[in-house]
Image (tube, rainbow, N blue to C red; front, side, top):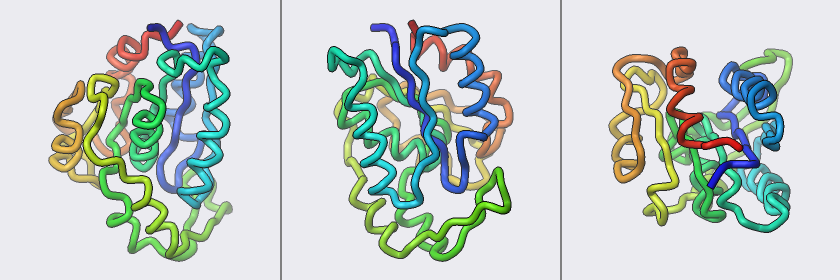
Length: 198
């Protein structure tokens, strides 16, 4: 089924201003004008972020056929996208997805600076670690719904851990590259093919 509604979830300290988010937004606008696109600024609180996203996407598509929606998630957004895809049985494209953010972000308690605007700050609270743990999904129910793009050159997350977590999905394992997927354009054909945008 073609995707008519597309959600993009950014990573930790990131925003809708990320290079990948802006490129996807431009592609949707230029090539797929009938596709509903949404890339929200996610709340620092994982529970609040997912409550807000879930409340919004639960209203699309109108016929409640969630196979017509898809989500792209980068890094922490990939972890969130997995949670959402498991709950809504929709397609998900994961870009260097975080596997255990509760563990990885436990050392980030305190004031953080937004990546794309150094004047914008937020506070990552201790309780957010428990909120992340509560969003862990366990084994994937519909592995065929996932495309994971994983870079061996990721300097933030371990590609082996990502590969193991998404072993039964469609995996594009990249030699080199980096956490931000500086070669994102190279992977757009596979992403667009998988999403099958309407």
